[in-house]
Image 1 (cartoon, helix red, strand yellow):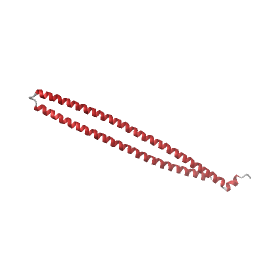
Image 2 (cartoon, helix red, strand yellow; image 1 turned 90 degrees about the horizontal axis):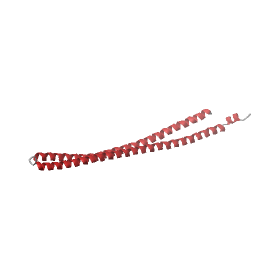
Image 3 (cartoon, one colour; image 1 turned 180 degrees about the horizontal axis):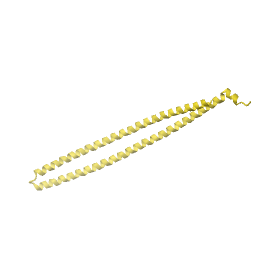
Length: 175
């Protein structure tokens, strides 16, 4: 009779282990899919932001290069007209300075935007991790409740079978 009781407990433990493995695997798979989705979105956002700024940088650098070339050509052609050349050279330097300031400002904005996006992505990952922890805690509570219910049912069943057995009744009856 104790062997049957032990076998019932072993069977219940085996079922619990299988249920725990099934719930855990399902939860890990769901969490991995969520995290991979978050990472994919983050990669796409980084790529898009980098492409946007890269295009703006390229346009500014190309324009800057063109301006530099024009300035050099003008310097060579206007050597005889020193005063005119000096005036245009000063104007070109002002434009270059403005473009340099624009590039610096654009770079600072790009850096700030990247930092803000990284903070946002960090928050998204933290939120996903917290959600995973909460789901695991809820799943653990459900498993514990189900396990307790199964154990109580197994104990009741074992006790009922012990007390309903006639041979046991005869042994337990006083002589």
